[in-house]
Amino acid sequence: MKISARNQFTGIVKAIDEGAVNAEILIELADGLVIASVITLGAVRSLGIEVGKPATAIIKASNVMVGVE
Image (cartoon, rainbow, N blue to C red; front, side, top):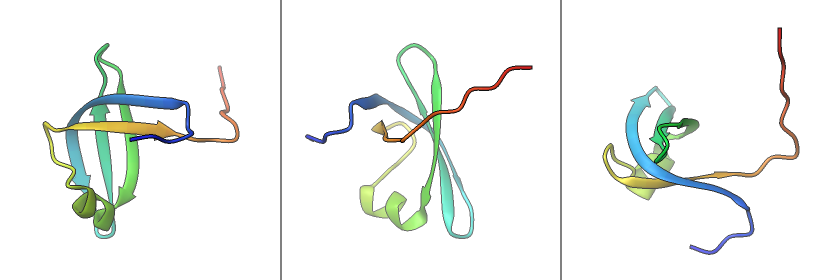
């Protein structure tokens, strides 16, 4: 897969929490970090996303906010 986004993180799908329209996908990276993404159920089905299979989180954002207390 070739894309222009530079922030790509490949890991293993650890969980899929399906709702009525969307699903939260948890991808565990090699270092144990877990990335969560919310996508449509249609996308889950068309991409064949399943627990235990590899997946790549592709992050494309104009900014990231950080807060501390």
